View 1: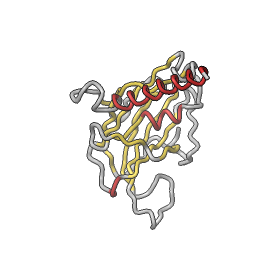
View 2 (view 1 turned 60 degrees about the vertical axis):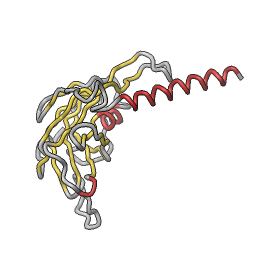
View 3 (view 1 turned 180 degrees about the horizontal axis):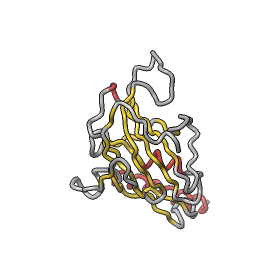
Length: 198
């Protein structure tokens, strides 16, 4: 019985930590409303701990990259093309890190939106594997709410990840999402031809 109570206490502490991170984390909330983040543009590499990202271009399209035109798809999409380097020793979780750590700031400041999909830029496949130290060019895709064009220049936020020797839940080493680190600011044009090969 006491054993179950111990696990319940650990789970409660873990849940409390997750709630606190959610309440305190995020662009615009961390450090108060006057927080100024470094800005990166086209071709500027950002080392965010577990990953390094280099923005190549951004564009708005009436269809998803690499898909045939679909007359039933009335959506418009914002696409960010990045060269991504996995700086960890494993490719297992790096793809999930990318979708969690690069968010579109729809209002340019605090309105964080995770990408709806992630795919390779060269063949448009969804099976993105970010192998350690092997740069890969990917497209992150967001559906624009109501098809409304994004504010220009479009802004994304990049979170930093820190390696911890023991997490509070598993007691194993892991890369844990940390504070907001950098903003990417790019003009979202009508097309992009950069970075097709990875």
